[in-house]
Amino acid sequence: MNASYWLRIMVEAVSIDKLKIGVISRGWWYIVFGGAERFIHEVSKELHSLGYEVIGLTQLINGKEIPNISYKLLFFTETKMLPIVSSVKFSLWAARVTNKIKPDIVLVNSYWGELSPIFIDKDIPIIAIIHDVGLFRSKTYRFDYILRVYILRKIIDRSRYVVVPTFAVKKDIVHFLRANPSKIAVLGFEGVAGPFKKVHDDNEFFDIVQVGRFAPNKGHLIMLRAFKEVIKEIPNARLWLVGGKSLKPQHRKYFALVKQLVDEINRKIGKVVVRIIVDASSVDPYYQLADICVAPSIGEEGFGLTIIECMAYGKPVIASDIFVETGVASPERCLIFRRGDYKELYRLIIKLNKDKALYQKLSVEGLKYSKKNSWKNVTVSLVKLIEAASKR
Image 1: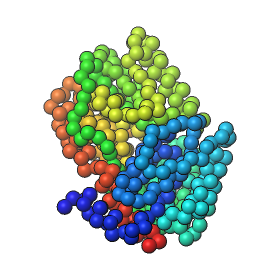
Image 2 (image 1 turned 60 degrees about the vertical axis):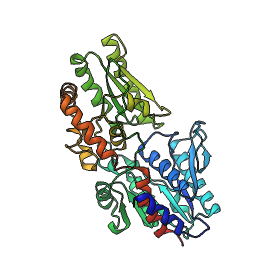
Image 3 (image 1 turned 45 degrees about the vertical axis):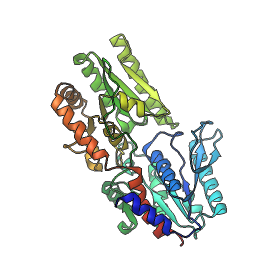
Image 4 (image 1 turned 90 degrees about the vertical axis):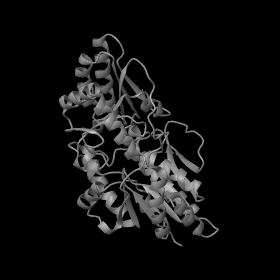
């Protein structure tokens, strides 16, 4: 009997009056295109499909709309204000609404130090979901990170459980936040929705795809430096940079720099060989288009969801060594390069373009690994914690 069967049995064992689950996330998938936001959306969808009453609370940014969803989603409409003020106002609103609707339990996307748990009534149990705390290792460590450490410690103390994707994230939380290890539950993986077979749009190009929000830790500049060398040896190469654009000032500056370099490359080549795709409604067409996917992150990663998503389309992946630490990449299913080393990345792209046997091997191994990762399996693990932490 598979995991889905036992999950249905667990849900049916709950009393007729199903659990009401609140879900708080400042960003939400289709509004913000990030791994933590995708996690929250997919888990909410799965929980609703299993009969739980799910009520999501999020921030509506600049009037963005999302497609129809199965569960209930309430919005705090952001007005024009400083990001830190907007964040605090959202947290107070989310706590106030939560205290009013009285859910049996609340899941909180605590990745960015979401404040609302501090203001939620003490009799409402909370599970904090922390995607990663790699930002504390960042060379750009600033005062706001120190403040975030303080907030995250408060949130962890308030929560019944803290859910993380990998043991690497658990280690960081224990180290940086002095958290009780027994309170931290490790999923060991994140979910992926995909065809779980090779799907490819055949064309005359060699398409390289990087998916990830436009933020300094994602390594777009490394990718662009490598691509400037790649295009000299693979004239039909194209690079697609697909991701969400953050509202943070430092991220906007970074995006402007990425765009400037892209324009320079295209101008030098004399045609468009690098394309930037911002806030795509779906990333699936780009995985389908890809010949290979690259994940050149230099820090602040908790898992690497885009790597599995690419594998689910039967495409080989080249990843920086940070993803070996998170557990999603290994030499058996990826080509690995030292983070920041654009010359090594360039060499691996050339190697994968020429070595068809290696290309096929990585495609098969990656596809095999992706099939073990599904949102339903993630929900199986999460349901056990929800039932244990809820008031019943």
